[in-house]
Image 1 (cartoon, rainbow, N blue to C red):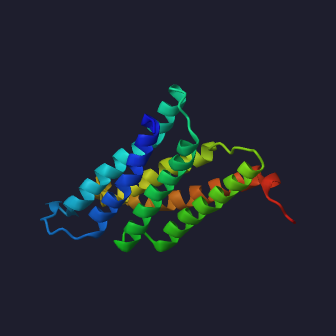
Image 2: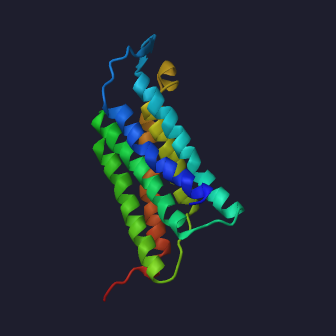
Length: 192
């Protein structure tokens, strides 16, 4: 259990804490000014999510730099990423902050690409993250933060950044998924 794997495990352990903060009603007076209001739960959940999301690149960097890449890390890292994003998306749907269809599109793409990666591994091929996959992750994280913070600070200029980023996340998620399958269509058995 090296440092990189500990960081990945910490990201997994933060998932239920974030969900608890988002889904359990703690009766504290919300932070309000002008027409803007946000619960302390959401602020804390957003901060923890930002910390957890920022560890995504950190664990891989540490593992590569110190030459401590392990099979456990290769398994846990993508699992941690998917758990974090899926849990928060489902929580946001429950909070009526995100359309269920966007969460379904994003989570479905993750399952599909994970399946493709498993097929590739059986063929002895490792599918690296594509540039579109990296963009997808960045846009999804941006969308989640905007939704967790009730569109702060864009609400003060009456710009629905949360809505724009949700649509952008859905579109780039679909495109990046298609990109993976088109570039790796030779791995998909058409007949057995």
